[in-house]
Image 1 (cartoon, rainbow, N blue to C red):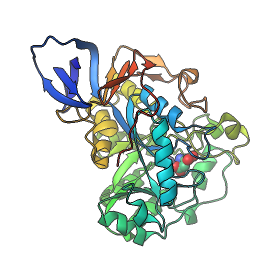
Image 2: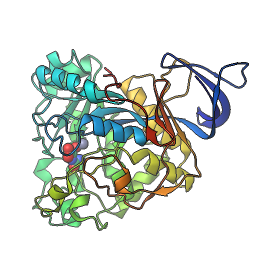
Image 3: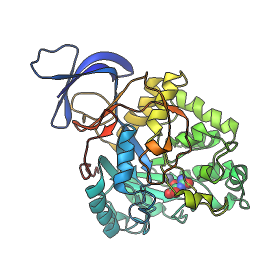
Image 4: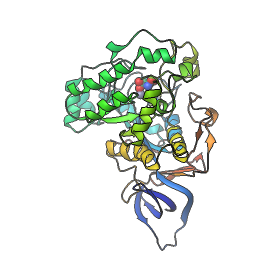
Length: 408
Ligand code: NCD
Ligand code: ZN
């Protein structure tokens, strides 16, 4: 297959022919002579995205999402690689469960996927199947907090693996908040900062700080040499938003100052990646009462389309967005994706900057059926290619269940 169009290469948009063979990019050229059919695209050709933080609820809560609907949603939003979290029911904290999860998810995944294992005493055996581990320093949805895992982390670090930290310090938590402002007071900025600071007591290695929500947290994480992740919900919302329990998430939505600071640091290139922390819950779970509602917001299908709108509106540079959603996550995972370059996997998202639309929950593919971004302007990709095959063609899914491979 050959694709021709305005292609994103090293921060620039240039006219190129992209040759694709056996899943990979075989050439990127200015001009070619060929008798083959060439697929011409009139918009921009970008690398497809990698979302390093999703909760597809499989196994445990497939009423909320499963690995098929999760990956189907991802690919409609231009994401062709996801890494799923281990706070399943039961949690993915031993080799047997990890192997079972790999097996079951392989049957359902439409796109490539990786899996975090929950760091535990079974770490050495789990290292046969993954190099990605998760630590919840404080309790969050479906996961009790545990910080006493430094020796286990050392084993991961010594083998070159990555440990992703959910950084909140439980001893800094206050009394339960009854609304979004109260929830921000309950799990305050200090709790995030304190947890991130404590990472210096952990062994040296590849530390990744999930969903940083405060400016101070971000600065401390960078000073410790960790990679830093920011979510779309902390960028697009503050605790002033009228979402009630639908905006309840860990760490909480913050105030204006942190919110604007995240945008600034993002634009300055001081954040490594964006990830959705796609954490779907059913509307019925969310409407019980604020106190009872589980924390978590869906977002895997809208992360790239929202950021493309920010580019179109001049709020963010295109290269910043591609770095955050494509290039850096692939680099961190050590996979040949996220750049349009010979030898890299042909994972591409074809957008047209003229195609704006409002986000509507009934057009998304989530099982939970809602989005906090209802009505937000965005740009979805018209076509998505995953390892040389069209998986989205003209906005419709043309891939298949089970086609995604486990990456490790
Ligand atoms: C996540 C979930 O629901 O799985 N919730 C959340 O608020 N982010 C768990 C987590 O990542 O903390
Ligand atoms: Zn999460």
